[in-house]
Image 1: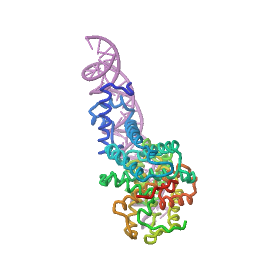
Image 2 (image 1 turned 30 degrees about the vertical axis):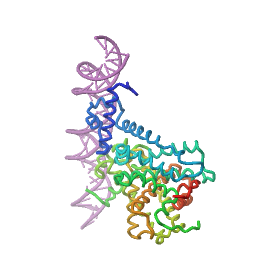
Image 3 (image 1 turned 90 degrees about the vertical axis):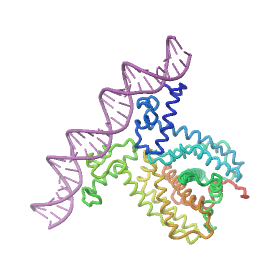
Image 4 (image 1 turned 45 degrees about the vertical axis):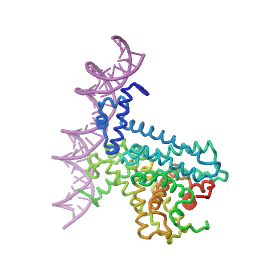
Amino acid sequence: MHPGSTDLRVVKTRLAIQSRFLDLLLKKNFNELTVKDIASAANIGRGTFYLHYQDKYDLLEKVIEEGLETTIDMFQPHEYLVGGQVIPERIIQFVLKIFEHFRENERFFRAMLFNEGIPMFRHRMQQRFLKKFHHEVELIGLPGQVADPSTLEILPIFISSGMIGLVGWWFENQMRIPEKDMARKVFLVMTQGPLKTFGFRVEENH
Amino acid sequence: MHPGSTDLRVVKTRLAIQSRFLDLLLKKNFNELTVKDIASAANIGRGTFYLHYQDKYDLLEKVIEEGLETTIDMFQPHEYLVGGQVIPERIIQFVLKIFEHFRENERFFRAMLFNEGIPMFRHRMQQRFLKKFHHEVELIGLPGQVADPSTLEILPIFISSGMIGLVGWWFENQMRIPEKDMARKVFLVMTQGPLKTFGFRVEENH
DNA sequence: TAATTAATGAACACAGTGTTCATTAATTAC
DNA sequence: GTAATTAATGAACACTGTGTTCATTAATTA
């Protein structure tokens, strides 16, 4: 067959399928989408679809994989930490870069984050983030006085879940808050904790 | 027909369907599940299924709705805040109660959180949490010196996303960390912020 | 220009859906 | 306890979508 083909026809067909597929996902529940829908939106025969993908789940898989791959490449957290010392400006820069990436790929993320029928996209995205993060930690090591092992596991989960939730909210609100402001807010939550950022006072005796 | 019927046969049939449905979800992708599968697991005729639910999506909907409803009732955050003052012991109690509820309803949450075919369960759960939270805020008001409006919106999102992520991780790890420890860790992150909890030092000049 | 390979579209068997209907069985109300 | 009511059964049906096949046409590459 033609895996990784450079034949113009193959490239054109795949591009049409993937692009129209995103369009459809923005309008319609993935569950309710048929191969016939996708094929006719892409102006190809239904049989041609099966020349490139096993089924609609395979197509979804490929599109997600590609989208997440380029997203993950955004993450170079070690550029923003110097030893155990966190430099505010760089953390903010880092988060800013993330939000910019999401805006630049709005169509993809909107389709994936909000289509009611797409299974576990946020979860999968998070897994990729975590994997990347752990890889980075292996490379650059950890700060000196370190928390206990289970806390070490928990924090990246908490942070990545929180970030993904935030990005979802940001999209839902038409991204009306500038990336820079989002980055600053995230920085505050990361360094002060949610409760203080919220305005609560915390009794200091634990 | 029979909505809200107390006829023994109806009660029995629905119970069988819902219970067996959860079993199946623990083993098999929701996408790949057929009405025939469900019916025969519940020892009823396929036609009987349609006497109670429109289709498998309707069944899923009903099961989720019921599960989330009882979960939401756990949340009485106002018991744990006194004015703008946060009392550590009570926050910890509150988070503890949440983790206990998840353990008690393990079968339901495991099926929902990890089945690859269930659309947006975490997202839906979060929406319910947020709604409840905003309702509470309306009732008890907010602390005195309050953050700006968009920060007010962002924090509950961040917290609830983070919590849901944590619970997922906890399940994935066979809930081997005791609820009490989880509650304490969550408290730390909430009050100190993830970075300090992690062991990073933060340059203080923002 | 010839050789290769992709796209087409019609046909096919198949699986699952959601509905119907006459029959049987269980439950409720009196 | 009996009669009236209502749920469950299972077979049948039309329908939609799936994934594959194959001979034919069209585009691309060497």
